[in-house]
Amino acid sequence: MRAPSDLPRRQRRPIRGRIWVLVALVVLFILLTSLRSIAGFYTDYLWFKELHFTSVFRVSWSSNCSWLSCSPCCFRHHAGQPHHR
Image (cartoon, rainbow, N blue to C red; front, side):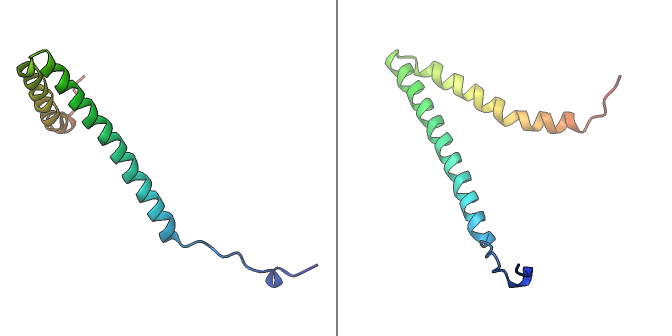
């Protein structure tokens, strides 16, 4: 039987390669979800445009954008408040 010191050592893969693969996967995921969102947004716009209701589309999206921009502020405000029971 061989002693453990006589056995060839396994070479470890460099951690940098793993990090780059992880970063590439995250960027790919974000890119694919962003493209899907952009395609949905454009499809909605074309649909409202076909119905001649682009003003409704603008109001709808401005309402969504204002809600999205105000939500973090409200969350931050309420997260700092003590709970009263």
